[in-house]
Length: 165
Image (cartoon, rainbow, N blue to C red):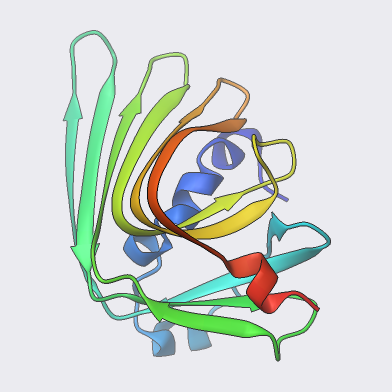
């Protein structure tokens, strides 16, 4: 189960799986299995990643706001139905940039461009869902960790529909 602080940024972490899980597949072999995210209505998902090149820039301001910019390309993601591992989909991310603005109270605003996997949990708005966006997505996390999508443009691919039982 995710704690409050890790839950707060979990959609962003899943969304940026290409950026945060980009270790070679063999690195996962000796570790525990990947976590199960409640990213689809009625079933959980796991996310694995291989390859990729990422870079991160961090800036903290005097007023306590933190800006994080992460960009990369070349990561291949696999999303699997946790209840039925025969149901999975694999795709390259082909490049993405995530801009995050974290406020002193713990709330945050996000802007994602490029090809990004976006995972929303139950209680998020709208959630649960797992969508591959190619284009631009903006969303916010409130102080309780609830994510709300504020705008999207480009194309959407419903990953839950593709790996449903």
